[in-house]
Length: 113
Image 1: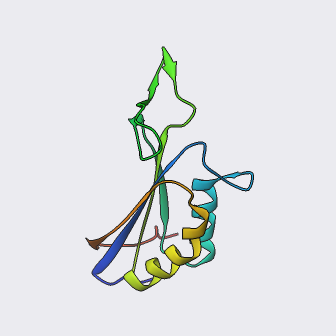
Image 2: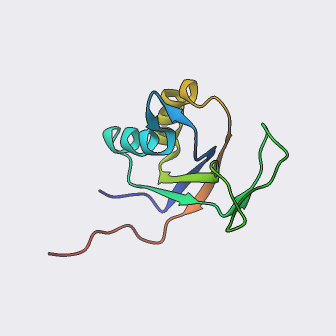
């Protein structure tokens, strides 16, 4: 798959406990991205954060383990493909933040076998 030099980065900020039916929402989003043929997706688990639903800091500390840590799904592809993808997933994100920004793609390649 080839990507143009100018791409876009879609970031989806959600909570670890968010679900799509019984599946973690972040997992469902990544599966949808793959099914839609997007270049790739990465999920990052935050160690600390808060959001629109609560001003309580969710943190990963031994004395207070949160069950709803922040999760960030990052996907890079073309603007058109990401906007179409966002239309597909938008109704399923009940709470969170989504950003879309320009990204300069230096390379996108698979390992040679």
